[in-house]
Length: 475
Ligand SMILES: *Cc1c(COP(=O)(O)O)cnc(C)c1O
Image 1 (cartoon, helix red, strand yellow):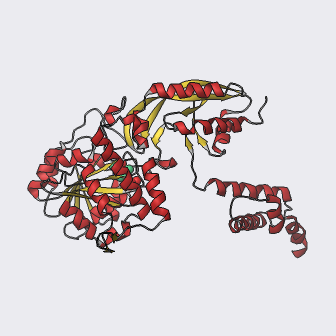
Image 2 (cartoon, helix red, strand yellow):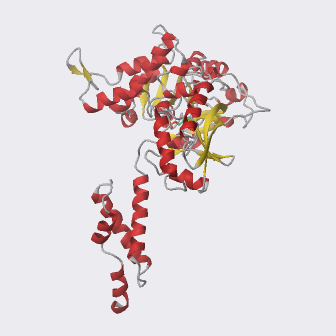
Image 3 (spheres, helix red, strand yellow):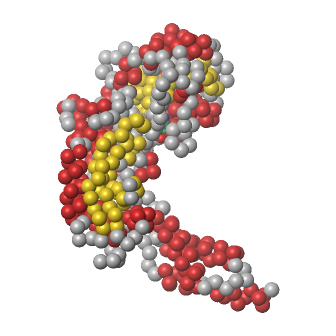
């Protein structure tokens, strides 16, 4: 055995040799060494008595290292036209949020310190106050309103379920069969309910649920009536569900809390963007008599990942007293960015400023006019005339995305590219491999980059990325 395997094993290069061949990389050396060791071990295992060419071994290590490097989180230019792109980090933050992050991140801060009294203070009091106002609290509400934030909307829902449906004799959550939905990857309403110890009490049918269905289902074991906004799909045709006000009134009479999971958390008039439907806002839903709403911070609110809970002050206070709240609370960076985003919305609401100029990027992108996009596309095309590709101004349909507003396609403008001498998919891969990576989509025989989701300040980088991707092609 020794005699047969020894020579072939020697053909697998040493760790040191591979490291020398790889040359310098921007991945820290201990991480590179671990990749090299892992790949060489796998080679020995796969080919115990086959000689392996050192070049093949090095190519394999290089590919593994490239895969590791590509997985590092970094900025990307989004040419997909999907505003809240779950795979691309959902909402980009606005400038004021980034400034707040930078300051709070690198200096000490008053996270839990009362600067007036010079002693320990509450956490997130400013954010919670302003968040409640953004969710419609006036300061003179009856019942009084409040708000709080946790790590994401799924966490908000788990906290709510744990609090209201956590006891064995009162754990039923009444929900319409039409709302037992899956949102994105890994968020299934029935699974969240089950894992929180709640028992599902389904009412109605997939397409029709009446107020009588709710009424029949509510009993002594009912912990909560839950409504889940169907954010990522719509139902048409023979469809019916009772108005929120009617469910709220029923829940009030029966003495059962009524919670709505809104998901997207739009606080601006989405319908003022061309061809976008109205998305219910937290303030509007609470005004209809819902006791609590929850929604994401990083969808249409345009802030960091967070889950906002707003509504009756007594209920919000009780949720904050749950031991689980401690495990779900936001860190200082999230609080700083969320606080700045909420303030931005409040300032813009008060001044009634143009939504296309909003300091919240998702809001601005949604409302941006075609003319501006077309002007940018034309300038980009003019700058690409010397390259071995056909560049033209095209049209596209941008989407809000993030599991929101599934019916709303926003007419948009694209930069359409057809490179000479390279398959489109290879060209797309080259753009993704660039620095920064550019992600577009292929349609109608072109690689399309939707300019609605490319920030104007990125146009220069976009040109450089296209240049780099065609560099070396036939001239
Ligand atoms: C997106 C969404 C969620 C999940 O929100 P996360 O912040 O990602 O946890 C929950 N419910 C609805 C209705 C949603 O649209």
